[in-house]
Image (cartoon, rainbow, N blue to C red):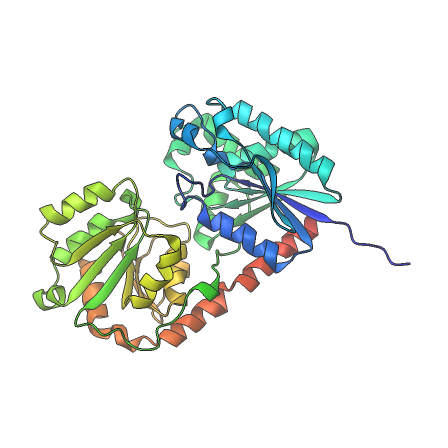
Length: 393
């Protein structure tokens, strides 16, 4: 007698997810879910209405968003998403959002057979919602923590939010961190152990340039959502200090939108950097591989990164890196693939740029690509997650 394996179903609660108004927010969560669904078609993946697309009291912008089809939409044979027509919703509270999630989970349980597990992407607030759903439906949950600064300062300032985050961790069957540094921070904050599984990307999207790009200037590329965290101001100060020959023969392309874009554009003029720095604004994600393939060096000296997925995108493109010792970069960048500088150290950043100006060609692009494939392949990451899923349901 052959015993048929039970159907496994993963219910995802994203804290951030791409929308028409913001196609970058939560893009890596989206790519992870789509990727692992394709990697193992035997498991169903159901995405609940993403938290950051709901018009909360301070998010009136989302009232303007409308979707063509509401309800549970099938994206692939084993991939589904709940879409909510936000024009039909007033601005709602978190209590009302939780009510919406409960209605969606009830539909999932009625429509799908087998065993269920909730996968929350970020402890606050998706993990908190998962904890509430467990109380209602008795469905276990896991949390993958992606907070770029853990925990966010707004959480540390609030005893209630801190308590809620700790409770969401305590109630989780497994906690996954994207770096060892973040794992230590989770333990220090919540006294909970976290498994380390790094982020990954679709290696097929990134190609190594076969020949050096014909240019008289060395091309330094930065890609980021521009904010104080990304330390673009430190980079600007370092560029100001560069040896004249290095500056005259280098170009610095800053790609990215964000809250600080306009301010940084003004600083480029005020600091007289227009000859060296080109602020090109946000670029479509589909164009990022081409920008990386055209670069000689990738530079991002952030004040903090939980992981820094753009660093592994640079490695996948065969491009050496300048990064700061900012947490996540410590586990990606080393002497074989780039340089690490002290956080907010303008002098070290300047010296790293000058070193790369002279030595970037000594880094073998294909060896950098192999380093990426050895440590950050999707196959390895997905296999680790599937082991967790199958151990719990």
